[in-house]
Image 1 (cartoon, one colour):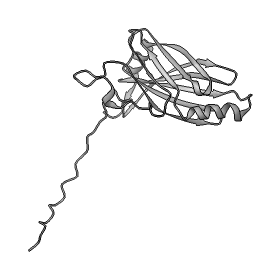
Image 2 (image 1 turned 90 degrees about the horizontal axis):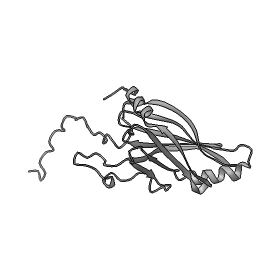
Image 3 (image 1 turned 60 degrees about the horizontal axis):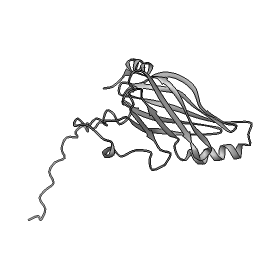
Image 4 (image 1 turned 90 degrees about the vertical axis):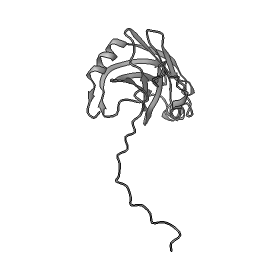
Length: 193
């Protein structure tokens, strides 16, 4: 007589159908439509911060930020400061023409706001704009960062604020046409639903 009953046969492998919330990140399986911006947010003797482009998705957009160090300054000093600060993400904020605003603080811990802390309506959608970092990196005098913004902006101007205080790069802003972002989101290609 056995103590344990025989193990049941393994079940058929099922397909795990988890999907992130529609507002949490760019649409997976979608190729975004890029809107070229190429606008300087801040310029100093040491470096420049620019908004390179916006990648528009059906559910929001990514702001692509670039930082370039002045190649004519002593590299150890300038790139060292930016690289040290770059271990933290830049501060990035947006303000839509309808008054909605959101930002991301320059802290390694503020990188992702926990999902449960985002205020949501009864259907689980955020009731305010959300900004989350999508990643970043670089070296050799240049760095790139991305910030996911939900939802798509209202018609009118979208103000984008960027700074990297630890590197001495003060806050600056550029204004992007919200209608252009919305139009671009319609051109994104959904490859896989």
